[in-house]
Amino acid sequence: MTPPLGLPTLLVLLFCVCASACSTSTQEISAQAESPCRAPLLRDDFGGVLFLRGGSLSADSKWSRDRLPPFGPEALKRVRDELGFNALRILVFWEAVEPLPGVYDRSYLAGVRALVEAADALGMAVLVDMHQDLFGRGFGQAGAPRWACDESLYANFSEPNPWMLGYLSREVGLCFDRLYQHAELSAAFAAAWAQVVETLKDRPSVLAYELINEPFWGTKNRAEFDRSIAPRWYRMLVDTIRAIDDRPFIAFQPAPTAAVGVPTAMRSLGLNRMIYAPHFYPREVEIGQRYTDDPLRLSHQLYTLCKDAERLRMPLLVGEYGVRRATLGAGYFIDDVVDALDKAQLGAFYWQIGDDGASGYGVWERKGNWSLQANHLARPYPAHLAGKPGRWSWEKEAGRFSATWNEDGSALGESWFVLPTLHFPEALQIELQPPSSYTREGSRLRVSAIGGWRRLVVRVGRAEEPERRAKGPQP
Image 1 (cartoon, rainbow, N blue to C red):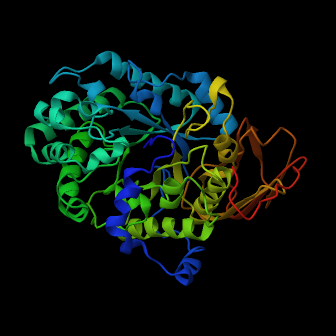
Image 2: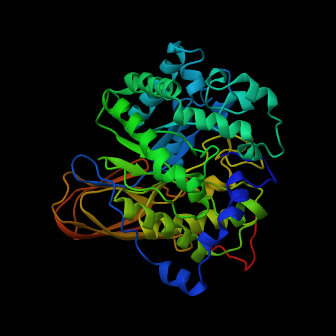
Image 3: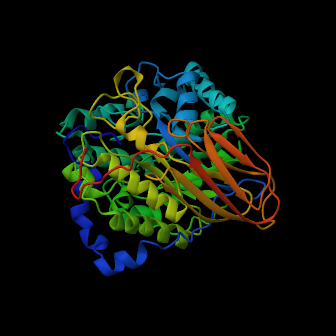
C-alpha cells in the first residue's frame, strides 16, 4: 500500500460507503481502549508465545528490474539490530514467478530464496506475501502478470489520479472476478504459489505464507467476498500449499475495508494453523495527512480487529501499518500505534523497509540515514515468552522498559526480549525478579526460565531529556 504524497488511499475513499459500520461513541471507545485482545496467541511448536515486530521488504521490489529489493544482508542486519525488527514480510509477485503461462523464472525464485536464507542467518522470522496492487502490471501496478486478464480490459482502462481509484473501475473489477471464478486462472495462481513453496519449503525462518495482499472484491460487494468468495478460494490455495509444506502458518486478509475499522463479514475457514492478518490504516491519517492525537481511537480500531480475530478463533497479526513522513504528527502516530499494539499484545509489520526520500513511508531517508519513522519504531518488546504474557510497557521519557510473564509450564525454552541498539547502548541496568541468568547478544536479551511469575525491568544508563509533546500534531 503505497499511495503518493498528498493523496488519500482507496481504502479511505471506500470508507464513505460503509461509514456507519465504524461509528462508535466516545464512551464506548474509552471503555474499549484498555481491553486486551482475546484472540488466540501466536505460539511456536514448543508453546512459546511469539510477538512479531517487523517490516515489509519492500516497495522497491515493485519497480526493480528483477522484482527484488535492493538491500543485502548487511542492511537487514542493521534493521534487526538497530531497529529491533525480528521479522520480515517479503513481497513476491505472480508476474515475476510466472512471466509467461506455464513458464517459471528460476532466477527470480532463487533470488527470493536468497532473501529467506539471509533471514535464516539473522534469526529473523519470515512471512511470504503474494503481493498485488490494482490487480497487476496490465493496469500499471505490480502483481498479476499481464496475461492473467483480457487485453481488451487493459485497453479500455483509463488510469485515474490517484491510481488507486482504478479499483473502482469495471475493468479492474472484472479481472478480480476472473481470478476468483475462472477455474483455470485460479489453478495458475495456485501453481505459482506451489513454485514459491517448493523453493522455500526447507527454510526454517518461514513462519507463514500470506495468500494475497489486499484482496479486492471485484464487481461483487465486500460482504459477499468475505462470506463466500474468499473462503472457497482461500481453501483451494491452502490445500495447494499444504500439499507441499504443512509446517508454516497460513496468513490471510479479509476485504481491505477492515484496514479502516470496518468489521469483516468473514466466517471461520475451519482450518488449523491460520493467522488473521488485516491491515491497519486509520482514515484520518490517510485522508488529512495529519494525526489528530487520538490514541483512544487507535486502540478502538485495533479492538475491532481483535473482535474479528476472536470470533474467527485465530491469532491476529497486523499485516501492514504505516505513515508518510510528511504527515503532521507522524512520530506521535507511531508512538501511539505501538503503545496500542503493546496493550493489545499484538505483532505487526510496518510499511515499509525502504529508501523513499523525505516524504515516504520508508525506514531510510536518502543516503541510508534512519528516517523519522525508524527512530520511533525502534522500541523494546518481548519477542518470545516461555509462558503466559502479563504486561509490558516502554516509558520513553524515563528510558525504562518493564515486562511481566508467567512461566506456567505451557512452553519450553527461554524468553527473549528485543532492545534496539539505536536507543539501547551497552550501559543498561537490568533487573530480574526472581533473579535468574540472562545474556545479551546485540539487540537480544535472553532470560533463562525458572518457573512462575517473572518481572524484567531495563533502564537505559542515562535517561534522555523528556520529550515535550505539544497539544497539536507536530512533524
